[in-house]
Image (cartoon, rainbow, N blue to C red; front, top):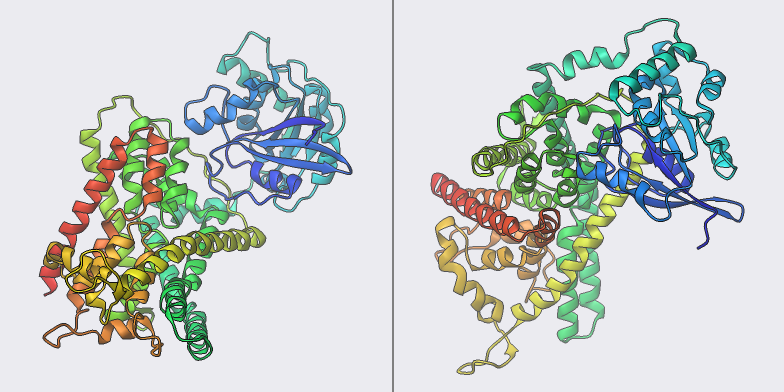
Length: 617
């Protein structure tokens, strides 16, 4: 593809770069109201008629002197061959003094620049009046007033990208003068000429922050928010989950009636349909969780959580910048670990990487939901919150506490004496961008289904085969249809590992699911669904009903409260995600840390399950 020019989009964190990038390129890069969302350069195409421009969105940074990996990523685009033809600098119009510092450094590179003043509505509310014509004259470049949230002013900006631009003169001191003081002095003089303050108003954000960032009330509010989310996960998702379960039940019955008898029929019904159904049924809960997480990020509340957590995390060897990865871990540990690139301190970053997988991710949600629905009654507590929602919150709190304690341990073992710091400007609260939220929710839910579906599809086929066939008597390597699950290859394998997991309350069936779910945690549900469907294609009861009805050799229920709680704790702590280990290797560039991570999390899971099982037996 032949481009007319290459333009790089730059600015401070949380100034609206990704929103503008999406508008100009019509792409769907993730955007939030939390600094540090963009962690690597993204490339898109801006089209006007038959003409095309390559647009590069860079991570936000405050200066041309990078400290973190994402800032280095932002800077390296200027050293590529060929370098960018034009710099599109986007600035928060309500905070020009801070935003123009990075601009002043880039202005001295000699590359043509365009300045986009974003968040003009907030600047107006604060009482800032910007003389754009005077500012254009002083800087010698084109300036556009835009609103990246609504798209206002972006069409004129887009047209300007295809025109020849002016090279800025050095409005911030001499070309060889790069001191902070000289730049800030020049910026102050410039703003004195071009901006005035009509009135000073206290933003609504400041009033809300009196409670949201309070050292005591702030934590309480955050717990309330989480509890409301988990209550919604159970109550709002119940109806679509029932529809999905009934739909797969009808599908299974129809296939059983119309498909000809044989191994293919059993594979489709007991393997593929049962395995996929066991995970798809939980998509409504996954979607609801993603919806609320996106809502908290988009409104700016997540940044407040980072702020109030900084003091506590610092004593545990982390920093406020660790909060974004840790909370992102509630969705998926893989992008959460990648988001640690905006952390300057290597020790903080490494510890965050090592403990983030302990945060309960969305892949654990189907496991928690299945087990909680089996053992915990849906009774109201204080007439408001269900007991199931409280137990779900407890599992997330358990994962968080484990992550913080693990961070404290790593703090003493990882030697790195360079001090860390945490500077964060809280973004202004915004009304949620519903289109962005729905898109994030759709993309993440779709990714969950497709990525998990690939794994489950493969595992379901192999598991059905090994659960349906076994060796012939007195023959080691042979094949025959197993009359019972215990006599299949999967049954023999489960029996072989059963002595190792009996102390924590697990039988051989659970053992099979533990092994398969090391590929991905959510595979546990698909595996159990396949196991409890083999040889029973005429019975399409819900999985939890089949598991609750399962008895041991003495006629006692297998899934007692002690066993279920032990299972939940095991899945709360165990490293059962090969993709996460691969990302840890990629980010640390060593197999040492993924190996340590796998070992310590597996031991923690086994020990925690052993304690819980014996305590509740």
